[in-house]
Length: 333
Image (cartoon, rainbow, N blue to C red):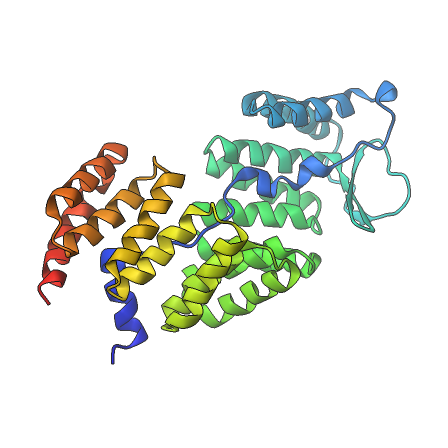
C-alpha cells in the first residue's frame, strides 16, 4: 500500500492539485462597505477625496484611486504626527473618521488608516506588492485593531508566496473578527500550503460551519483530504463543491486529478473537458488533459493539448517536457 507521501508525490508528478484562493480583489475590499458619516452636500474636501477614490477603484481606475488616497495621506502627514487611534463606537463619528458597519457592530477607523488600506489595495490590484504591503502595514500601525487591514495584508503576502507572513496576518485578523468565514477559509488555505494539514482542516471546517454554501471551502478541504490520503472524503468534498457551484472549473480540474491518480482516465478526461469549457484560456487545464491522454497512449491528442498550453503560457514548456517523459514511464508501469 502506498503511503500518503507517495500518493502526493506521484500526483504532483502528473496533475497537481491546486488550492483555490480568494485572490479576486473584490473579495477583500472591505473598505468599499465604508459609509460616510455626513450628508453629501456637506462633505469636507477630505471626504470628497475619499469618495472619489472609492468611485475610481470600483471603475478599475486604480491610478485615479491612488491619486485621491495620496491627497488624504499627504494632508494627514502635513497636519498630524500621529494617528488618533482606533475605537469601537455606536455613535456618530467625527468628520475625520470612516464608519464601517458589520451587522450590529459599528467600527470607526481614522480616515487616514482607511486611505492607506485603500491605497494598498489599489497597489495590489496593479501588481505592486511591495507598495501594497507598506501601505497596509501603515494602516495597521495607525489602527492596530483594523481587522480588514490584517486580512488584506494576508492576501497580498499570500499571493507573493510569503505564507508564514500571511498566516500571521490572518491569525491576527481572527483575534478581532471570529465570525468571518473568509478569514478562516484563507487561513486554512495558507495552512495547507505550509503542509499543516490538521490545522487546515480545522479552519476549513469552521469556514464551512459559518458558510455551508461556500463551494471553494469544500474544494480546498477536498484537496487537504487528498493530501492526507483520504480519497473518499476528498471525492465527497469535490462533489459537494460542484453541487453548490456547477461552474467551478477548478473543482472539475481537481476532481479530474483525483480520477487520474485512481487511473480512471476517462472520468479524468471528462472532468478536464468540463473545466476547459468553463475556462478555455487556462493553460494548466490543457497540460493536465494532455498528460492524461499521453498516459492512455493518445499521443497526437496529447501533443495538441501541450501545444495549446504552451501557446497560452510559454513558461510551461519545461514542465510539459518533464511530465511527458514521466507520463510515458507511468504508462509502462
